Image 1 (cartoon, helix red, strand yellow):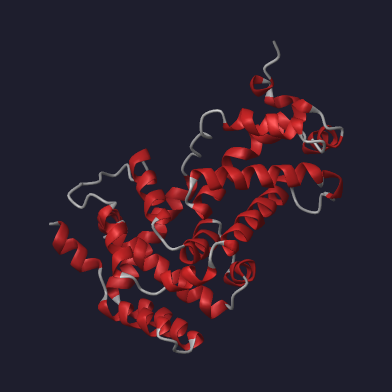
Image 2: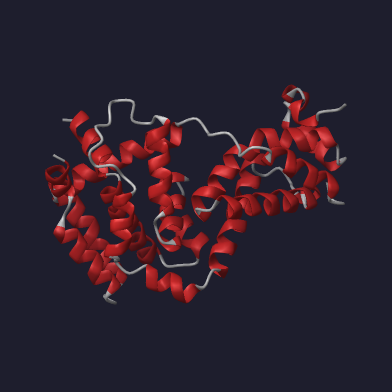
Length: 206
Length: 84
């Protein structure tokens, strides 16, 4: 029985060949597309949505859109960059649809939010030098997920995805100063939530 | 001690500036004040540098695998859709 999820990835090593396969609606090309890009894009969706089910929905919607518009892909950027933009826009559209009034309220400095984030971290832990062990990555993910949507989106776009301030502000449809303030709020919340690890790294540098 | 180190990384002035942003002060001015404060404040500059270092490691960390069965479900979906 065919198991397309276990195929040889090198079948479509060349991006042009992969695109040709996708345009022919080749099943193996779809498999290669997923194997090559889905993990990275799922991570992006999860960071933005902070919910595994919503992240999966974003990924599904993004890949369906991509396959539906594969003939429109002109190759001006890499396929990965194009997919990244589709998934990012899909996630941001979903965030915008989520009760904007509540989001704005939650963006105020919120002691409860800070306490929640701090509660995610065991302050008695003594993190060693293997700072990006699975445990810490999970703590960063959990601290991110405790942020309000607006702060998390600003932080993910600017500090994790590496967009410029101008690009991140444009993606979120806000002015640059507003983006900067959201970013500082997010960073302060994460400084508090991840304090033992931040302290440890600060001491490494002294 | 956790409590001592937490105090050492907390900056009351930064919190004040962020509150000013939330209270409706002009955001351009608030953003500039925060940036200037972080540059001058030893606590904030140390914490921001350490946060940046931690995030650089986070970005470079290996991607965790997709949730169980997600890849196959996505493939089934794409192959079922008339576009795929």
